[in-house]
Length: 138
Image (cartoon, rainbow, N blue to C red; front, side, top):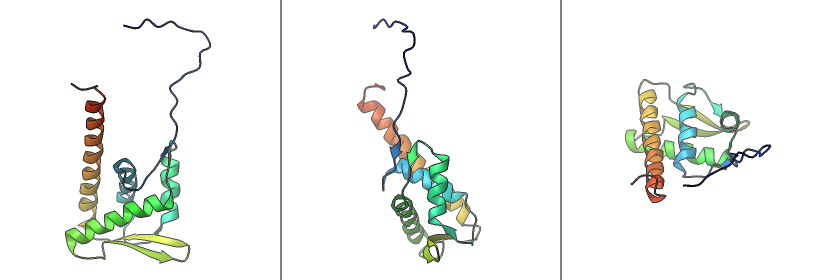
């Protein structure tokens, strides 16, 4: 066992660098889709506004427009696979750049929650695998 000594005026080493969100990362996608799930329905929302909100909510993360669009396009693909329709999750060009429009029907909310649950499970599994690989869990 290591014996540690208190050292006066020693700065805290518990600092973390920012996390740069990457396309395909379940932790980044979870944050994006969690926010998308809480957006209004039936009216366009600028992707730029979603990026700005994510960067404000998660100050230790950096989200780019490309990462956010990638997560939303994957969500759109999941919708098309489940419902054989393109109307539920729409990304379109607006006057001020790309916009997201979410269908205003009762099926959207529960479906989006299931997407967040799926992403949360993927993150939990990734953390579990990391803990096992690093020896934290026997």
